[in-house]
Image (cartoon, rainbow, N blue to C red; front, side):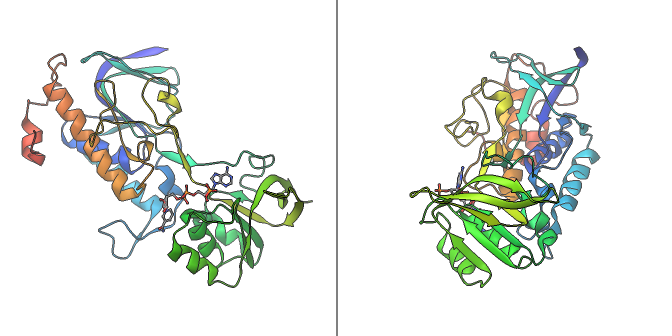
Length: 339
Ligand code: NAP
């Protein structure tokens, strides 16, 4: 392991809207942040097509284009990037202590760390799901629906995501069967009604998927499903299966070090992004199981940047970073009312 000589002011782990917004703000605060952005930088929005609900883009914008713009904007003010995965973090417990983020054979030391690893699509965890990923099993209809034009497909799940995916997929597929483990749906009434109004959407409840199986061509051919109460089994022929059963936070790196809730979301203090450890902040989908929007994640990345800057400025044990006169940017840029 090579420990880098430089002591970083801010290391940001993660590169969705939260991570890049934290980078934008901390770079504008002259803190020269280092973003550990992963190989697949840009987060879940990289897998999205049109984003129509991010303010400022009246005609919409493609997800990957938006993330490129986020990244470019952060880079413009001096953000540096490591396009690799963080493999381990070591977090100091005392104010002013240095944290460490490991990436490959390098260890980066930092006065503050902003965690923004986001969330990933939840997996069902059945046989064939992983093996047939990219060959019929998908977690993103908006990305992959066009491959299933005039084909039979299923959606697994009963929430708003499942309805949204089904409605989108129904524009391409000949048939979309929604397979859900209960007769009641968690999805909102309006989304359910929209899905119910489409003729090529069918419903199969209460059923669970036990296995995905390949056809002769090696791609997904059918799924074995089971009635959740009677146990009756049946085979459903299909070319595509879209799993929309929610998300799980990518908190594995810090699960032993920070407090998390039952679902693994990192717990922060009150309305701040502070975690229980000094100089460690968390933002975006990693902490939010309620809103999970690009715009709320970006807002929370901004909060984390401000919290990190205030920590650097106000913690007596921390050496004030070069180029950051105390109070300078907080007053010049944001003039935040501090209680
Ligand atoms: P969700 O509301 O948590 O729904 C997840 C669904 O997947 C539930 O129906 C659940 O079944 C099912 N499920 C969970 N684990 C499963 C498993 N292992 N096997 C089979 N089924 C499983 O998640 P979501 O749909 O992603 O929505 C998350 C939040 O985003 C919600 O607040 C939602 O309103 C919001 N959202 C809104 C929109 C919109 O308004 N356009 C679109 C997408 C999401 P049970 O019901 O039996 O637990």
